[in-house]
Image 1 (cartoon, rainbow, N blue to C red):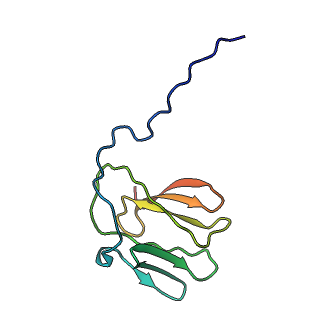
Image 2: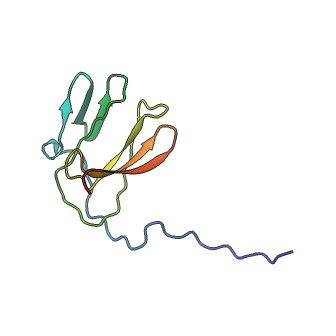
Image 3: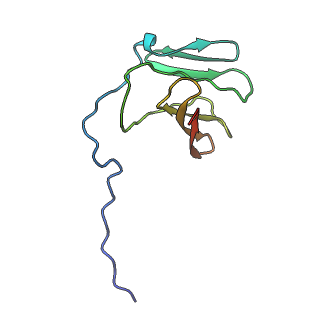
Length: 121
């Protein structure tokens, strides 16, 4: 029989992070790009960013914030989904240089996640 190993403490998942530098209360619609069509919309309402798709897909809707421009950072977000099933996806874009040049962290409604990169290298 092997001797019992002492339990190790859980490692900090955020080593070296400092004080909160930025938080978005979604109260400044002018710094978010928004759009609305019969197929999809991105809008700010009641201090929330609301993204909706109104037709069967695949369809995509994106809303980018114009400021601040961040260097290295740690991000947290809370997503509340009213309708999400199967391979529906939602996520965040990072270092977006427009609608086709970005890094994207995606979650699907089956609980899987992935990182994607898009744009010119």
